[in-house]
Image 1 (cartoon, rainbow, N blue to C red):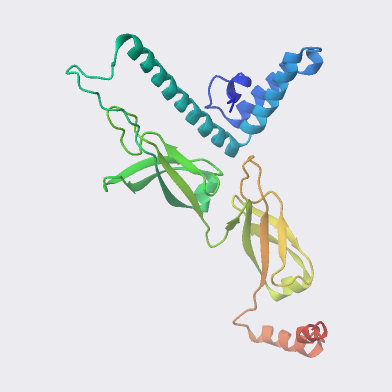
Image 2 (cartoon, helix red, strand yellow):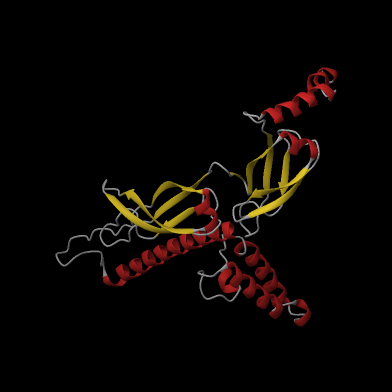
Length: 293
């Protein structure tokens, strides 16, 4: 398999770049190798294909992380292969160099294994991002405190890598890494489903019957929405762009499920109004149910 260096294709010197830097690099590269300014240049045509391919992969955080892992693993494997080839050449001309001063075979260098664990974080911390300390058990069974940075809008199930915090390497080998899988916890107000946030919107019987405008809390503030006349319990209203962050940095929707709440304690005046409504209203939901049965 041919592994392309997408960062080099976009003329970026490092993989530690933001999505905005990737977009800027893409625009510059696309302008430089655009067919309109490179008429008849077959090399430029091939280059623009690679540029578009690189941007499609690196502009999406999830696919960028996957590419980075694949690229690093490929290079680590290629590096080990080159080392083995060099050792074979040295042995061909100089004899077996894999021996210590006493002629004994040196012990093999081994990298430590990676470790994966999972933590739960409140939805507020996942939405806004936070730097926090967590207490985890090491492979030796001891408690150790780690400081981790939760990026704003981290995806449910995403992993944070702590380099060198895995199992120890042997004979000078590098330590493995610690991967912390993030599990987002819902709270009493918001429930995360995909990129959408779900919440309950409580209405009085008269608000549901007559229609109104109400304020509904979002993750960041409040927004006013219109309640149509005659709305029923269980119906859902969708408020665009008030949900959770997508992998592209946009937002899903906030979905409010209607729940009509009847007052438990009423004044005598309120009871009188309900009694009056009972006498004059011909509405019977049970008859409607029977008609449609």
